[in-house]
Image (spheres, rainbow, N blue to C red):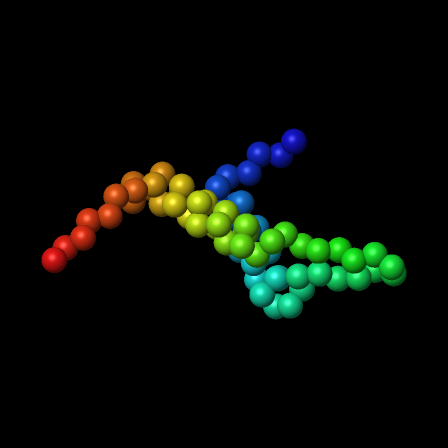
Length: 66
């Protein structure tokens, strides 16, 4: 079983989001219909992975200046 980094997973998730956004949510082969992952789930995973990468890079805290 392959092990992927968060950055590699994030890249794959973004490719999936782009595929769905381009109109390829589902496709048909013969009598069967295939559907890709749910866009909302991919977007949620993208946010989670982005936050993990940001935190690991030392950017886990946000400071608001007024």
